[in-house]
Amino acid sequence: KRRRGAAAGGCEACGGGPVVEELAAAFSVRVCADCRRNDDAYDLVNATDAARTYLLPQATLKMLPAVERTNPRRPTWRPMRLHLRRQLKGYADRRWGDAAGLEAERRQRDARHLAAADKKAEGFFRRPAADAE
Image 1 (cartoon, rainbow, N blue to C red):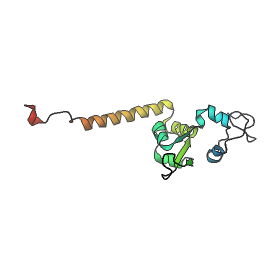
Image 2 (image 1 turned 90 degrees about the vertical axis):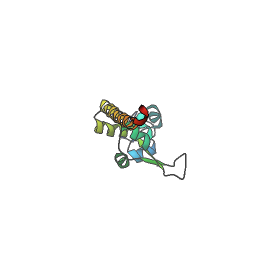
Image 3 (image 1 turned 180 degrees about the horizontal axis):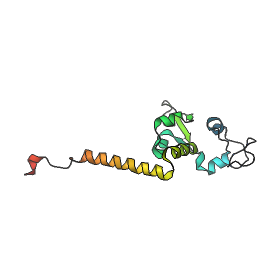
Image 4 (image 1 turned 180 degrees about the vertical axis):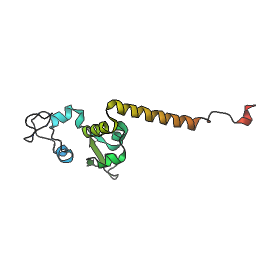
């Protein structure tokens, strides 16, 4: 939904205010600071959280536009890649269909993970056959 002012260079959500240049340059999204604060669609999400939340593979995340920032925990580490939540949701919807499809895939992965863990731990609590007398 574009409102008046968006075409003239204003915020695409409310039509006014100066846009956040970082989002405009990296993601081609023209939004003002107030709208960014009030709408979680404009949040920046790190790659790890994006992969976990939206079940997107690393290859997809690497092709998406991102903002790179110095890692706050260790400045000598590789810079963080931050993605726009709105774009992540869009790609997740294309991949999984909708929120229900994403949730179904998450449940299926959890079930596979649980089955693998059960299989791995299957014989852990059994006594060896020689001790069973």
